[in-house]
Length: 296
Ligand SMILES: NC(=O)C1=CN([C@@H]2O[C@H](COP(=O)(O)OP(=O)(O)OC[C@H]3O[C@@H](n4cnc5c(N)ncnc54)[C@H](OP(=O)(O)O)[C@@H]3O)[C@@H](O)[C@H]2O)C=CC1
Ligand SMILES: CC(C)(CO)C(=O)C(=O)O
Image 1 (tube, rainbow, N blue to C red):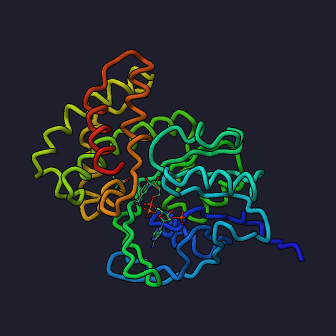
Image 2: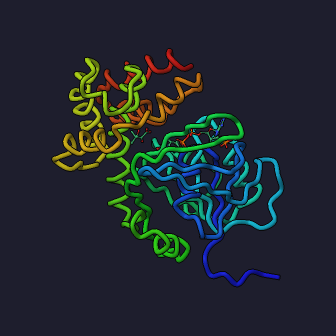
Image 3: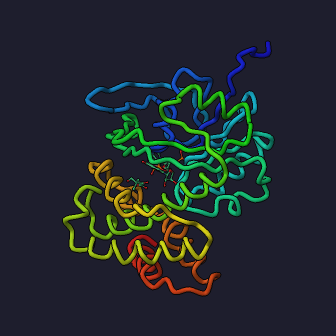
C-alpha cells in the first residue's frame, strides 16, 4: 500500500559522523541511511547518550522505494560512488549536500543543477567507533544549517521538523555562508591536521601564526570572486574554534586514519579560483601541497 505520510522520505548517503548526526537530528522523520557502517549508532551529546537504529541499506543493496530527498554527507573521496548511487536509485530526488568544500555541482554532473540544493552546516560531530560493532559519535555543536529556499515543499517540511537547526535562506545568503565556511575550513582544517591537535588547542599552537595571513589571502580570493565577507570574519573564525574546541577536525581525522583528505575541495579550490582570477594564493597552495604529502 502507498504511504500517505506527507513528510518526505529522506535517504542519508554516508554512515560517518555527519550522517549519524542527521539520522539522530531527524529521528522520527521517515528516513534511512545508505553506507557501509550499519546501526545502531550511539550519539553522545551534553552528557547524554541516545542509541538510534535507523533503517539501513548497504551501498550495493537494492532499495524498495526512491527517496524524495537525498542528504549527501560522505567525504569527497567517496563522492563518485554516491553520485553513481543517486543516478541509479534516486535520479529524480532532490540532492541536499552538506559536505564541506566547493565544487559539488561540477563533481555531481550529470545530476542536473536544479535537482541539487547545496547547503552548509556548522554542526560538529566526531566519529568515536570503539569497534566495527560499536559505532558512536560525539556531538560537539549542533551548529546552524543553511539550505537554499527555492520554494521546494520537501525542504520546508524538513526545516519545520528541526526549526532550531535548519534555516532556509536565499541564494545570496547561501553563497555567502558557503564561502564563509570554506574560508573557516581553509584555516582550521589544514592547520589542525598539521599541528595534530583538537580545534580548541590551535590558538596556542605556533602554526596558528599562519591563520591571519591565510585568512587575509582567502578573503582576497573570495572578494575577487565577488563575495563580500562580513567585516567580523576573523572573530567569527575565533568563535567557531571555541565552539568546536573539543572537535578533532574532519581533516585531522582523515590524516590519523591514513585516508586522503578534502584539501582539494577546500584550499585546493581556493588555489583554483585564484588561478582563474589571476591573483596569488601562495599560502593556500603551500598548505594544499603539505597536506597532500601528509595524506596522499
Ligand atoms: N563531522 C563534522 O562535524 C562535519 C563534517 N562535514 C562534512 O561532511 C562530510 C562527511 O564528513 P564526516 O561525516 O565527518 O565523515 P567521516 O569521516 O565520519 O565518515 C566518512 C566516511 O567514512 C566511512 N565510515 C563510517 N564509519 C566507518 C567505520 N567504522 N570504518 C570505516 N569507515 C567508516 C563512511 O563511508 P560510507 O559513506 O561508505 O558509509 C563515511 O561516509 C564531509 O564533507 C565533511 O567535511 C561538515 C561539517 C561538519
Ligand atoms: C567546523 C569544523 C572545522 C569543525 O571541526 C569542520 O567543519 C570540520 O572539521 O571539517
